[in-house]
Length: 495
Image 1 (cartoon, rainbow, N blue to C red):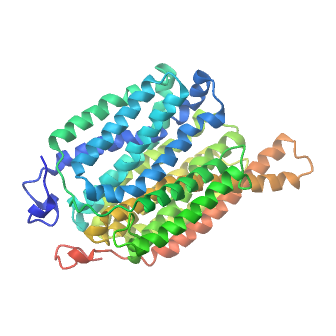
Image 2 (cartoon, one colour):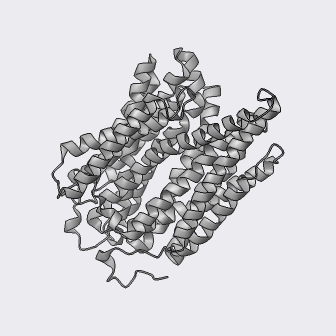
Image 3 (cartoon, rainbow, N blue to C red):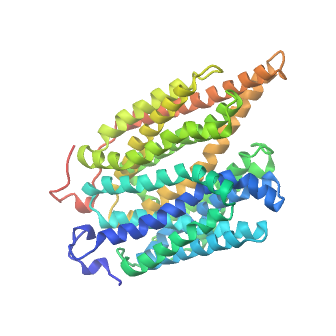
């Protein structure tokens, strides 16, 4: 069942007729879909969990905060794991951990047991993403990766998009435990399928693991995620010790971590990936797009329920078309990337993002719902034209030896950017809202409160618009990236 890439005469295993690529892809995609679906599946059920276990909002929020915290801790160590263990070993172990965590959650008698199972799920989810990215980078040559990454994008976008809707139906008709029970058969199938068909595609080098780097990474990324996640709660702000102390400790740890990685011969996370300009471009564009997404996924529902007085279910349905379309467009954008390169996607995509953010700075109390639907659809279309093509192009520039480190950097950014995005945008909105009410003649008036909320939302989107403009400027300097170890190949298309 095992296969070492050194024994193949092919540079990429998808070009080897003896390798059955489709079963490998299916093994990874099935596991990825349900692991990523799990990230948003609990959002609707938090209130039910509060009632069932008799816990507070702050306590139940650890189901979300703890999940992001663990992901932020385990993802950075994925690079050495990918070089120490085979693809098959890692995937099976990861899915087994995730399944055990899911089973514990389904049977949990107390909230503490439920939280423990949830954290085990996070370990599995956190390691699964870099495994998938690294495997597809090794399987497919650069000129075919756009379409493949588009399929990954479909899974990554579609699963969390349907999560809240699916969760609402399951919780309403079956109960919250079935959020976990329904997932178990699919993860078991993924394990059995992978056990039969998944082969190793990576090269086992067994680099020396620096334990101190792991400690710094854990404290650094964990502190950043915990601090910013705490700032996003109603009871805390950036002046609260529970917020700024973890952020400060995390920042200091990450600084020491960075200096240490640059000196080590075998770093835990090789930051030399930032020497490649298109990878650095991709990271910046990724962060900008994440900010745009979070500003909408978090702020727009608050605006619709607060200023427009829409029901929570209606607000969710308003965002659903854009989320689904984003997932469905990912494979199409991937194929367009393979054919035309990154510039013809990133430049118009970034421009549409700028226009959409500018329109959203003009929201008021009379904004029609159809305009919000259109804006969110345009936003998610621009995201699909930017995120996966930019990420694929950035990873394409890396040599094979840096694939595990590039994927580790990219996937680490997701929970970190998520925690930072939520807390920063909510803090900006609350700051502008408070200032508006301080200057109002009747701050307790219902209309004035709604107007203050609109002012806060407009300010958030102004900040998002400025970052989108920066992204558009960066997109003008993007070119098709090709790694040094395949630049001599004649089948690499040029723009």
